[in-house]
Length: 165
Image (cartoon, rainbow, N blue to C red; front, side, top):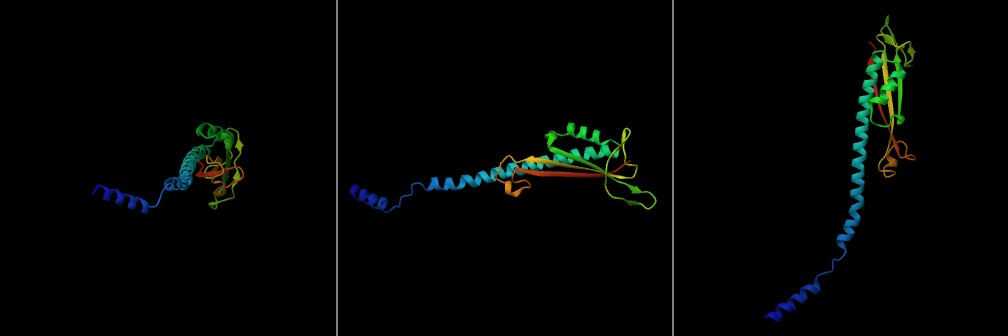
């Protein structure tokens, strides 16, 4: 009886195909896909965080411009309001003059200084535009999908427009 079992086991093991290396090949095929997913999620999360911070900073700067801050004061406040590298942020301050007689706004003009205040008058629109050169943490992995594929950067921007009071 025991001999019959041994013979039966030999026959079944002889018919069973060898499956060595299957797990290794599956792992080798899966790891790059998981790495792309991981770096993609990380990159999108960081860009969303930087965009939210840039938007918040743009709102604060536009609020200051609507209260009469000069462009130099706005730039200084931007440097203190954000945790990202201020050297990578470009700030553009403009105003759109209101013709009080017709109620029509003119074209956008660079915001300047008149004494301790900016040159926008009450009722004019002020706009603060910020652009940030975000360096991709994934290097060149996603460089073809962004603005500056050669440098591995993406330009994030935020614009806020308020009325001067």
